[in-house]
Length: 90
Image (tube, rainbow, N blue to C red; front, top):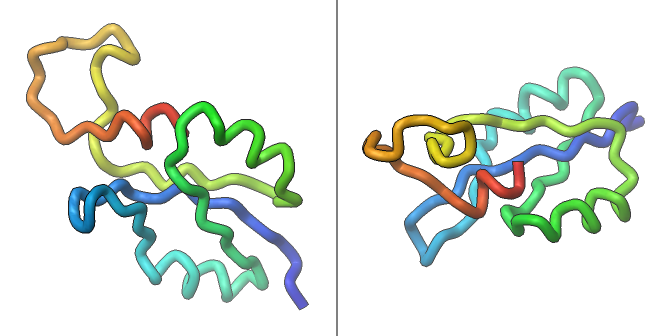
């Protein structure tokens, strides 16, 4: 019996034209707690509507990657690997 249904954000990969990916270790880990994961796509502001329609018990922001400095008033010249889609979704 599934006790929890959790949404989880994904990494944005530059492979395959910008695919969203999730490491399988997350599912294996949460299986131990009778929780099932639903991968959340990086769709920006449209995510609010999707989450409102989903019947999830919680949301995991999986982290990783760099957050664009423009979002927190940081140094704009800092080199990084940013994903605007992921930043906006999370």
